[in-house]
Image (cartoon, rainbow, N blue to C red):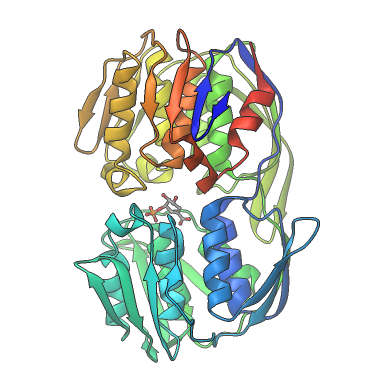
Length: 434
Ligand code: S3P
């Protein structure tokens, strides 16, 4: 089914089997960064296999952190403590916004200057959301009109009390990490509660931080100069990667999938509510907690395909899963409407435009809006030649849409799936029945 970087996806009858997912991308980035600045060794099992999380590990190595990948796949990190080493060259963040945004909070607190660079897509993405508060903390950051590359001159940081204008977990983690290097107590308020892996990970590595609600939203407080200690952990399966298989199961009434060891963190699990509302039957067993992260085994059965509206706080909570939900929307009974999701325009690609373009190529009717999409249900799609726009989630979302189209679909630039999930197409083939 593969030809170079293009992948052909044929229609399916249903999906059945067991899918074990590599570790969650959001948690992997944070564990790699915190293990690097902890005291003592850490061992991380089921670290994300995606290129983005490899970029984070590469940057940590450039900052003097010693780590190795063991034969069993685990990453063993020798923590450097809070003081890292000056990098000999620019820190290459590749395609990874998470790496650049979160790591900027750590390098801003170092005694040396660093340059952070990214690929063409990352070089177009907004960074003023971290530049503004880190500058207020005392770092000096030069950029290309708010975009990468970033030249960060570290400083002895001052604690700030900052209300984030954009709900972004990456920015929240960046500032919490910077707070470790600040003099005093840093307070950060986010307008909506976003994924809390930064908070959970900081606690797992031994830091203390407080959370409360204030008039503006969710407030976090962290004191500076806290030392972290290394941990031994197994990262739960990536819920955003699971979304592709869950949506595939939702497409066919006869589908049955088991996904063991999956991340069930409540700040990420809104996806499961929406899929149940659409008609997927989901049951969870073996619920457990590992270092503060909830994990469970999921059994799902395709049953119905009703519609949904995703808006407000749900759009922030589902931001990475909206492309695949939108890609299956034409097959639902009532369609799917997405509002308040303007952030999708500044992801690895403009995901609103990319979804609309590909759905139209498959013959769907789509209304594209500034902050979302309205996709009517009850449509029949045909196979087409599609572009991934160099965006992993677009490549994978349309592999799922293609399963119920008439005829074959060619996805150009499908190799971009490797940014978060290199084995995606092989795993999909293994559970698809035709
Ligand atoms: C992430 C937060 C989200 C998400 C990204 C991962 C994280 O980005 O889209 O894939 O790990 O914190 P924003 O912080 O820009 O919303």
